[in-house]
Image 1 (cartoon, rainbow, N blue to C red):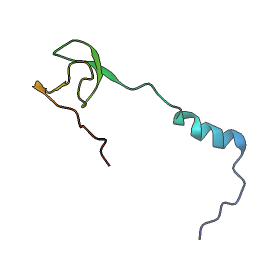
Image 2: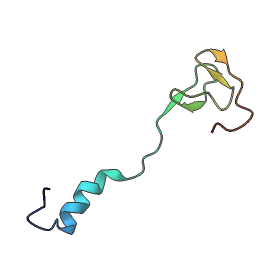
Image 3: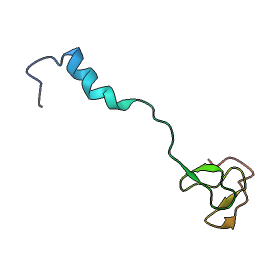
Length: 62
Protein backbone atom coordinates (compact mmCIF):
# COMPACT_ATOMS: atom_id res chain seq x y z
CA UNK A 1 0.00 0.00 0.00
CA UNK A 2 1.32 3.47 -0.83
CA UNK A 3 2.34 5.53 2.20
CA UNK A 4 3.34 9.22 2.06
CA UNK A 5 7.00 9.92 2.93
CA UNK A 6 6.24 13.25 4.61
CA UNK A 7 3.35 14.77 6.52
CA UNK A 8 1.15 17.09 4.43
CA UNK A 9 1.50 20.58 5.88
CA UNK A 10 -1.56 22.56 6.93
CA UNK A 11 -0.84 25.21 4.29
CA UNK A 12 -0.62 22.64 1.49
CA UNK A 13 -3.75 20.83 2.70
CA UNK A 14 -5.73 24.08 2.96
CA UNK A 15 -4.60 25.27 -0.48
CA UNK A 16 -6.03 22.09 -1.95
CA UNK A 17 -9.33 22.67 -0.14
CA UNK A 18 -9.60 26.34 -1.16
CA UNK A 19 -12.04 25.50 -3.98
CA UNK A 20 -14.42 23.49 -1.79
CA UNK A 21 -16.44 26.52 -0.69
CA UNK A 22 -20.19 26.78 -1.25
CA UNK A 23 -21.10 28.71 -4.38
CA UNK A 24 -24.34 30.47 -5.27
CA UNK A 25 -26.56 28.47 -7.65
CA UNK A 26 -26.43 29.42 -11.31
CA UNK A 27 -29.63 31.17 -12.37
CA UNK A 28 -31.20 31.74 -15.76
CA UNK A 29 -34.31 33.65 -16.82
CA UNK A 30 -37.61 31.85 -17.38
CA UNK A 31 -38.71 32.47 -21.00
CA UNK A 32 -42.38 32.44 -19.94
CA UNK A 33 -42.53 34.76 -16.90
CA UNK A 34 -39.01 36.29 -17.07
CA UNK A 35 -38.27 35.47 -13.43
CA UNK A 36 -34.94 33.92 -12.31
CA UNK A 37 -34.93 30.11 -12.11
CA UNK A 38 -32.39 27.32 -11.84
CA UNK A 39 -31.30 25.66 -15.08
CA UNK A 40 -32.95 22.34 -16.03
CA UNK A 41 -35.62 22.76 -13.34
CA UNK A 42 -39.27 23.78 -13.29
CA UNK A 43 -39.89 27.52 -12.81
CA UNK A 44 -41.10 27.98 -9.21
CA UNK A 45 -43.13 31.05 -10.22
CA UNK A 46 -45.17 29.92 -13.25
CA UNK A 47 -44.71 26.10 -12.93
CA UNK A 48 -43.50 25.61 -16.52
CA UNK A 49 -40.58 23.61 -17.92
CA UNK A 50 -39.43 23.78 -21.55
CA UNK A 51 -42.61 25.57 -22.62
CA UNK A 52 -45.02 23.09 -20.98
CA UNK A 53 -47.02 23.48 -17.83
CA UNK A 54 -45.87 21.02 -15.17
CA UNK A 55 -47.84 19.90 -12.15
CA UNK A 56 -45.54 19.56 -9.11
CA UNK A 57 -45.45 16.28 -7.16
CA UNK A 58 -48.08 16.02 -4.44
CA UNK A 59 -45.81 14.00 -2.17
CA UNK A 60 -42.02 14.31 -1.86
CA UNK A 61 -40.07 11.84 -3.96
CA UNK A 62 -38.33 9.05 -2.00
